Length: 169
Image (cartoon, helix red, strand yellow):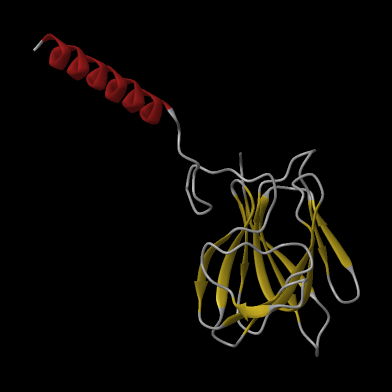
């Protein structure tokens, strides 16, 4: 009887220690977790329509929600395609139909993207340490103020930049 009680006590203590060990560990947040803050741009928050991605490695496929766009990856949309991509916490790139873009750099202190064609809305929280550079076919834009900006690149007209809304932080 006494050995059974001792064995049960040891088993209970072991189970309790294992439970504390498991509960004390914090699980790794998944890539699409709202609590994960990335140190680089490129997380895909939303997609609609047909979006293709050609990876810098040469692999190609469909761009999906929660994917990540890396430096050198080329994203294209068909006429109905739409996407929202994280630039930094609180800043987003929203692309419309018939658009092609890629990241030149995804570092938060040196964010650069190449808008080859189409339309993009950039909702930007800018600061001394965070600016967004947008390379266009024949020019370069540097967004140094917070706000919402629309950039249109067409084959038949010069590129246009419109400041849609000031953003106060």
